[in-house]
Length: 326
Image 1 (tube, helix red, strand yellow):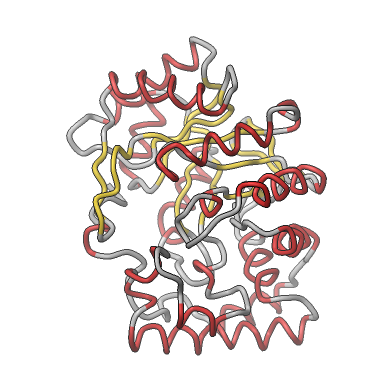
Image 2 (tube, helix red, strand yellow):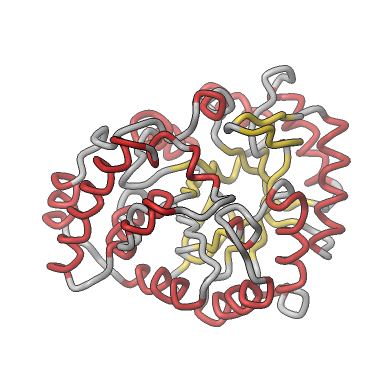
């Protein structure tokens, strides 16, 4: 697979989001998840993304087991800062220097590694100056516990201030054909500062997978059931939009997922989506998107079929939105 750079960090053009390997979208199978990680490495997908809050530590432990004998093949990213998911999208965050130092030790232990390649602040703590949080993260770089620093779901102002305190390698935020808030101000700022962009939920939390009917009957425990875009009339309207992308994919001879990922890859040279899956067959479909090259005319056709701002409903609940873009 082709490589891309996030700041000074070289990674595969597509990463693997591991969150769904913990019980976030319903039942999981650890053995199958480990097979997915191994197959990803075989395909050249070497950029793995996890977080301490996913499965309350389960996800980091799982990824650690999966890479135990293949650590030198992996660019490993994890996140800290969310102490607790309260419910309804509300999170309790901690960006204090003391929490930074404690959190990294727990993540290193669960992952079974000496160094984390990319360490993100998962959500900004509004009660702690970002310079203090990033300063403590910078100390981890000096100590050799972390190689590069990242932020997730922060405002442009926070990004600029953080970058002044210590170089920020990557910004991870939700970005897809379905949710494009990042494009207006954050992408240009990242380009100006030399910060890479890592879109999570790059296939619209499942809307762009081609299996849209399954979204009407999500299993118990799937957190998407509580998101506005998946409810009532919003869901009906968004499924109709997704079917437009399905139609375009058929004319292009690829799958809707591959259209969504190829569209993202065309938006920015230093952008690396991290589609998540817990099944080998979907991983292989995702990885093949790295070879899809969309022409300017095809990109314009996609934008016309699913214009920015056309999706119904917010991407998070009101409580969830309160934790982003700050």
